[in-house]
Length: 319
Image (cartoon, rainbow, N blue to C red; front, side, top):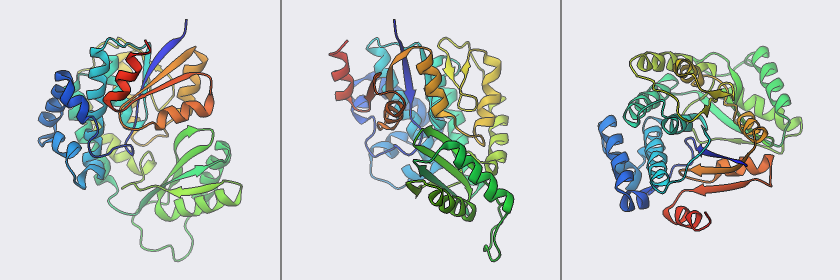
């Protein structure tokens, strides 16, 4: 018999109105938003449901995204849908941790609120990220190492940041995201295209996430996590840092601290789940990005994206 996995997306999939239909339809989902607002100290509902610019600023995006996917998750659980394991991309790892039972929703919201602030403050300017399309991941990593080792070119401009470029996300066989100082990312992007990448697409993000430049933010997050109680892991989840199952509560804080400045091994995570017999991947929260990554690896397994209430209703009719 096959296995079911819940997947939780990271920031970038947010939009105004996300999870509003679940908020209106399920008291459990409404309660999730109330908990998020209490932890944040401002109305998460207002940021998620009403037109504003803050929703795309990391400091606010992260708790809004987590609230939306946790609200959808609450409805999914209310309908009796279960999973054998869970995983989340970057910020989405906190959605997986909530589903695993390792952290209460209240604590997860408090931690993510601080995570967003620390990541926003770590590199206020001069950082960048880019998606490299259709180039062997090993080549992308090699280019990053070459560019970083060579150092900045003469007249590189006024940067206070170290010259850093590295792989941020191994998303799929055809999409690798790089991260670091703006000029280093641009140089690596150009070389990747020269070596056969179909395109290098600059990402609209506010920092060089999952790079060594975020190490200080990770350390600050580690201090916050010291005051958080980690409970028993009832459903195993996979960590971004090593693409392996987390079943020991004592590992959680260390992995989350490292995750801020480490590569997200999402493709490797999916490969492990597929190797373990997973044949149903349910994406919970805004967008369909993660389902797309699954299909790049295996077209035969079933993927379900539950972003809107109609998605949940349609899925319930099939089970």
